[in-house]
Image 1 (tube, one colour):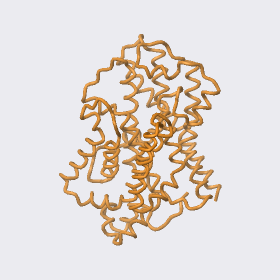
Image 2: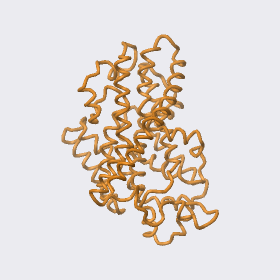
Image 3: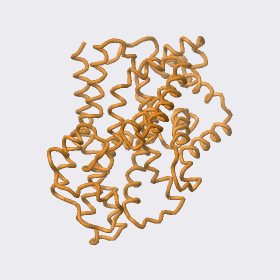
Image 4: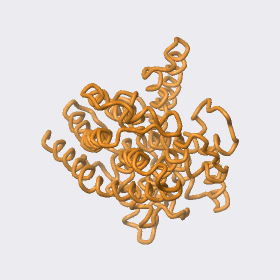
Length: 388
């Protein structure tokens, strides 16, 4: 799928040294330019820790929607980190920019077509299937009048029409079929434009300039009265995506620093990153003014969790399972939530509905992953190969 250039992964850099770690191989690679070339392409293995991290974040989105759909929800502070849905979305953007930057650079129209087809298969086709599922369930379980949060009434409370379906499929940020779809209107558009961002940020100085430029564009848009529009939100979320790109460009140096950190400092860095990621929750802030500190914390988690010296369960089979189904879980949990509320609200206790919501969401996401997401991903790869 990608042209191989030199060492493709951390594993290959260390393959000739028995018993070495991928990070230790970085310090043996010598010339920093050689290291940069070695990391310019996609690794031969998936970064399982990042998949697992995305899976954990997806679970927090699932329970975020469950907790906050109840109008009078009073959530203890120690529960809030486990329902940090907004933080998870920021993490998704940073991870996406990071992971896409590990691929081969797109330098020709033919390569861009192949790249776009892979992204369509990976993200958009499962999204289309989720729109269809949401539309069918909306017709079957049109929302009841229930004492729930206001945002409950933004989904499944008007008949499904062709206009609504087309609005969802064309990635409108105004969603009515599934409360989780809003972020995909940015994710899909930004990922398709990714090659231009990669080109802008191909060198360290350019990375900083591009990030600053994107932030200035965001400020200009807000200053000129476009603050509540898609035009304003796109550069806002683009900043986090580009942070992931910049992180990937400097990851060889960061991983080498992590390798040589004393254990106490390493774990302290993890704690600081997690605190920055959850700053809004930990500081009990009443209004969220910016997600910048959350994004910085997410960047720290992305780098640190790749160290084999940090064992927090991300390499376990359970974590890898949720990493595998994370996108499917994100797509289908809203359908499960709205359908179960329509059927069981007032008939089952809250804890019973919550347990059923968790089990059904995971089960449906696994089936969706097997039947839709993974076949669509393979189809996108096949389309890309046919463009050669």
